[in-house]
Amino acid sequence: MLLTGAEIVVECLKEQGVDTVFGYPGGTILNVYDALYQHSNEITHILTSHEQGAAHAADGYARSTGKVGVCMATSGPGATNLVTGIATAYMDSVPMVAITCNVNLPLLGKDSFQEVDIAGVTMPITKHGYIVKDVNILADTLRKAFAIAKSGRPGPVLVDITKDVTANQCEYTKMPISEMADSNVGTKATYSEEDIETVIEVIQAAEKPFIYVGGGAVISGAYEEVREFAAKVNAPVCDTLMGKGAFDGHDPLYTGMIGMHGTKTSNFGVSECDLLIALGARFSDRVVGNPKKFAENAKVLHIDIDAAEIDKNIRTDVSIVGDLKEVLGKINSKLAPQEHKEWITHIEELKKDYPLNYDPAVLSCPYIMEELDRITKGQAIITTDVGQHQMWAAQYYKYSKPRTLLSSGGLGTMGYGLGACIGAKVGNPDKTCINIAGDGCFRMNMNELATASRYNIPIIQVIINNHVLGMVRQWQTLFYDKRYSQTILQDKVDFCKVAEGLGCKAIRVTKKEEVAPAIEEALAANAPVVLDCIIPEDDKVFPMVPAGAPISEAFDAHDLESES
Image 1: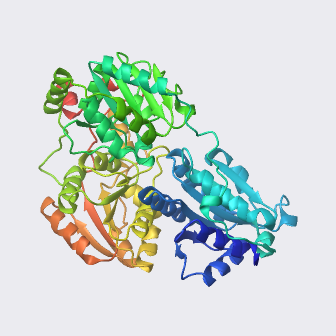
Image 2 (image 1 turned 180 degrees about the vertical axis):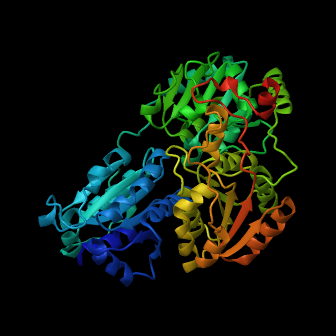
Image 3 (image 1 turned 30 degrees about the horizontal axis):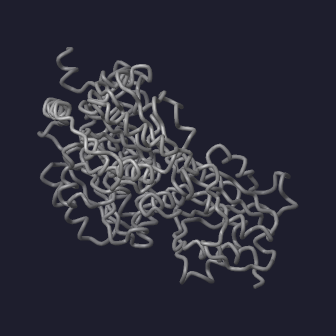
């Protein structure tokens, strides 16, 4: 059938099963928005307050559902406003297709009004990017974009379409996904049965194995295999921020997060182990600390789908490149149950000696997170911004399922959480979705409350309000002799009035006894609610490892007190 390029965009979205698009219209993308108007009963469009919010919402939708998230923007500043969201998705391997439209083909390269080479701008932060200048290749290009975004190690793909292509016509034939070209090039398994046997031999020889679970375990859907594997190896399990929920946070083998703000049990245990098994993890600097001192007593076994991650940050002794779910399935079928009683007993003693703790006398983020966990029974989807509150959310809410903590791990994007929470709620309407943000982060994209109220998306926005840039202030306190340069936010901003002005319900919380009633009221509201929680300005996240130090040097408030 003869369709315009704009109509082809919509038909291709329908082919891919896309039910929701997040975006903001403008001049060059008008034809696409006109086509979306004609299909509004099939594809829901969420108009965000800012294009960055659209990218974060598409990201949150993708992380929480496992589907490809879709965002749209017009040319020039509309497209560049997507860049931070695209980079966030790229760093955390989130499947996303960003569709932008550019000026007419004859105007490209002439500094035309609202012209930007967005494909060039985003080249380093996308799996692939396309500029479509011919309507005849538009459908195939969009199909390839979706295939690339979700294949292998997922990531964002940009499709930039000139405006005249959206107006031109060509023949379009619907194509089922099953008939589309395989774009899984370069991600096929490269391991052999001998490699599996080698892994099993290494595991069987270990006396003190430790399992380190990363975001790849969530992305691959390998959580059942991870849990069976941990039980068979009989090894303690730590996770990264991105790996939360792949292993049950209530399991006796679980030791908590690893790294800069990981538990002492995880950091000390990994430093003592004789075999570190990394599952879908990339050995980030926030995990490793000093790479020369990281797990220096251990052999390293690394399983990951991306060959580029093997030996990139930490040298391995044994590695397998392949899909984690598939690889662990094969290992589990051949591995006999192991037993490490002395090692597990030692780890249990570390847990008792070094529990997470906080001051119970004051209102704090850890207390709020524990109350959220108790009241929601650990079943909520938690999104976060970046900073102290992010670490507290990772430490004190117990994640038992994958895709329930959505956070910017690689890029560390302040302002990520609110858009992501909206996207998660749209993708999971039956689940409770709560965003945890510091007051510094909340200022960056609080305009997206207007999006939540416009569509009556019943999210809960918790502001951990200490009137400072908490994590930066923590570093200034510990390493910069309390020189609080530009981190104090004591001003006249009233977040409750802001929330109400943007159409949301607002509750201020200043005491511990107010926390539970406020959460219950927010859950019952069936509307977007903001909880402005006032905590002390000098609360700190512990344990902590100084940048570049070995993770075995993790310290907490008690260590600082004993030193002084």
